[in-house]
Image (cartoon, rainbow, N blue to C red):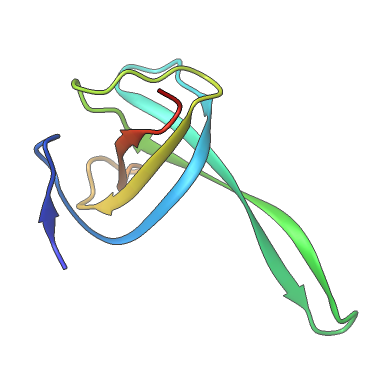
Length: 90
């Protein structure tokens, strides 16, 4: 299902909630979140971190440590395929 948010970019697909690890570049942030992976051999779960680069729209202000909601969108650059749709820290 495609939805066009107030940020002006059409989003579709996966939605994640994560923490901003770095926001040093212009209009780009690195967001990480923790996920669990089941190891069948040991019958246990393992924590892993996923990190991706996301686009920061002009209408949203973020800084390091903020909790944000990100959604998948069209490729915006070589490494950016997600956009921040909401800052949940405010």
